Image (tube, rainbow, N blue to C red):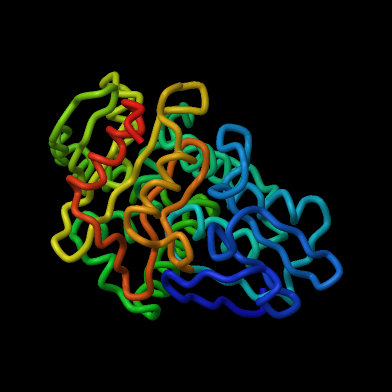
Length: 305
């Protein structure tokens, strides 16, 4: 790959990007192809069915296996979560995406990201947690949203290094050590139920991989809030497309209407099972109060709009 451009919170259309561009996981909304100008968007958040749309890293690997040569391309990112990092690794290592350990990790990260922990990743959770630790630890420590674009690049480089270690077969001791001294010591109740009414729960949690535990606890519809005081950072999510009564499309429209963002470049949005507030440059999200978001969701559920 020729270059990586990281611009937190920046969105554009595919047409606004130069030739030989690959937008990853929301930089351009929705999966898109412009073969004539060698421009592609690999995304599974907008304009698609979540349950059957591959995560960005799986799309990147598939593109390569189907003949894309990423050598002359520039990748455009607006975030550096584990799915994005794995996609970048695929584009930087096209000759390795079909290696057994690479395929195993791509599948685990992709499946986890596609289904938010509602679907088993076959004993790979500790490995994925270790690979993602530079990102997830920064989020748990409330440092991630303060990072500059250079800070996000440092996260990317740290995660790429761990992916290399795993694919090279050099990570087993580090994973075991991380599991022993970090994962086992982590409080398994590090979330707080704020409210549980009208068929969904409002949960406060800093852990970006909290969903698997919440699904296991029996929840199917959630509003998960990160503990920040400078902005409202949250996710509205349901376990799968087969859980009814929690319509992301209606929530998206109503919350954009309430916040006055219908004509903005930075809006509430997402896919069929998950959505959230706009990602703005500088790490800010929504200006709404949490209670306003809860009231908006309640009105939709109760048919009071």
